[in-house]
Length: 131
Image (cartoon, rainbow, N blue to C red; front, side, top):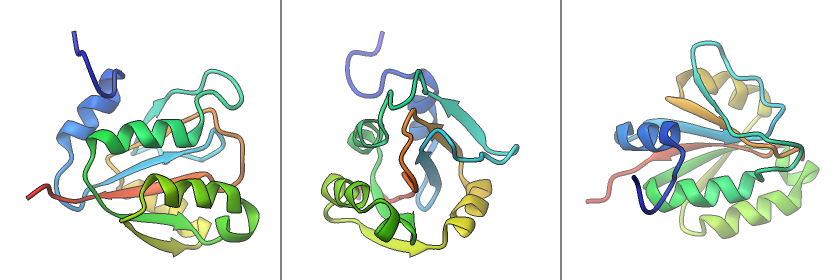
């Protein structure tokens, strides 16, 4: 039995399978996930688990070199943007239209769905390398 880190076996498997520049999405309960993208659904009830809680656990195991975030978060959910920046202070953030972010999920290895119910609480993480 795994003692530390992400306990969800599907998330742990996806993280272990990530290569340099692969994408992994994490987001809110309302995000439409393309049929061809694996969906790992953690939602239990509204707000549980939160987007930031899940993201912070993923970041403990995944080396991230860049994040893609919806441009709309700046005006529609600035609190979540601040929490995101705090969680990954040294990672480049590229802001893209939300419509583009949703389309880009087709290229992600997986999407982790949380119970978050605040607008634009979505990110695509681009994996880096540890060497």
